Amino acid sequence: MEIAKSSTILFRNTMHITDGHLDGFRRAITQAVVFAQEHGPQLMVEVFIDEERMLAHSFQLYRDSDAIRAHWRLSDPYIREVMEHCTVQQFEVFGAPDHDIVAALKTPDGESFPFVVSPRLAGFNRLGTPGLDGSHS
Image 1: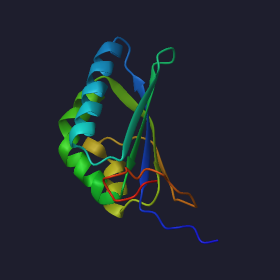
Image 2: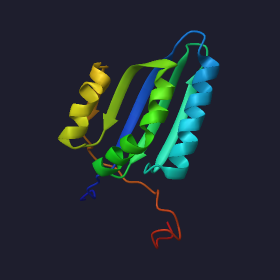
Image 3: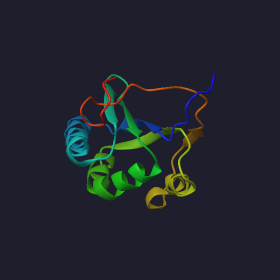
Image 4: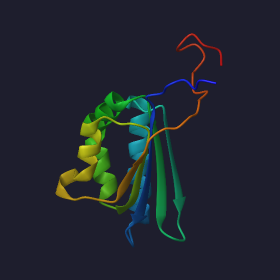
């Protein structure tokens, strides 16, 4: 059986929330998600929080590397605001982003953070929205 090729890329960002910044983090991340929902190219954004360990997990699904570039151009002020309240503990990329995307992850603002890239093996999605792309699935 042949599995369809996919250019989708999934980001998983694990952030450590700075002590005393939980409320600020909540406000900043909520504003960033609202902005992404209204203006961003992401197919999906979900953020989960573990208050006990002061960790947050963000998942973002992109159609391709061009969508990531568009997100970075549009969302820079929101990303900076969120980063005032946390540090990246681990960043995972699932898929095959273009080389410039990987290079940009290596040194954002001159500071590197741990990340890994895992190429896609197989899969599918049911993210088509009826009425938007003509499909009904």
